[in-house]
Image (cartoon, rainbow, N blue to C red; front, side):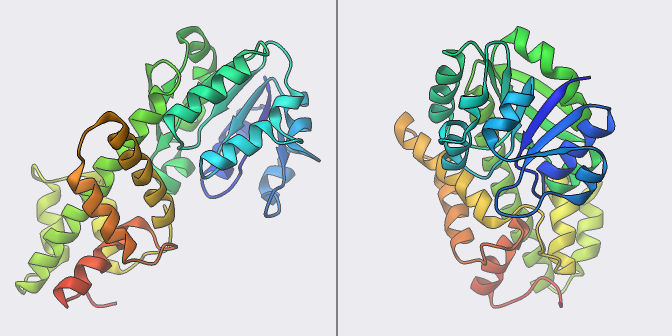
Length: 292
């Protein structure tokens, strides 16, 4: 059993950390903007005063925070992880952040004799709770193989995509597909509803065909039932699409439909689940997919 630090026990991080704890690993946590989940403390997790202390007491430190600046702060602030590391420890960043920043962070951590993986996830709160996350990993093969048994406690589809930063690039690709598929499902259900056909029955019919997808299954139901509580907040998806568009500019390529999805998100409540993109389409159509 390992001593594991887990920084960022929010909607996603708390159940992920819980799976590690349930397997018998000792957790070390630190409170940031809100109290630590009581169920983790009741299960034996130890609260530390600083992120430095978490790193000092842990062999492996997982990070699950919202964005690139928060990862940088977590690692390199005065009370950050870096100051508690010693040679041989491993940092695993499961946040969704900039690939180029990830490479810089990894280089700094590796300079002090530690290993680094970027391992963003897909599957949302549902996947985190069910330990069915898709985990996209960048880093050295031998480090991946050593950490993989821990990944397997949190997810099912676990892939070493390439070197450090490749996991983040893969996650951006994932978020492009998810955003565009949410938009497509929203358009389809809106079209059916406006034409006078029950969108719930349309969804049921399409689930068995070539248009079937996890987005149609989960988010199509959200659109019909008007259940837009996150989930995965629009603000976080917009952060990921910003990364996609910024990196596309650097690569000299155009992502026109990604830009359209971002503009539709701009018209929505940023605290809603990302399935609420359909509300922007409904405003344009002056028609709602289903009654609230």
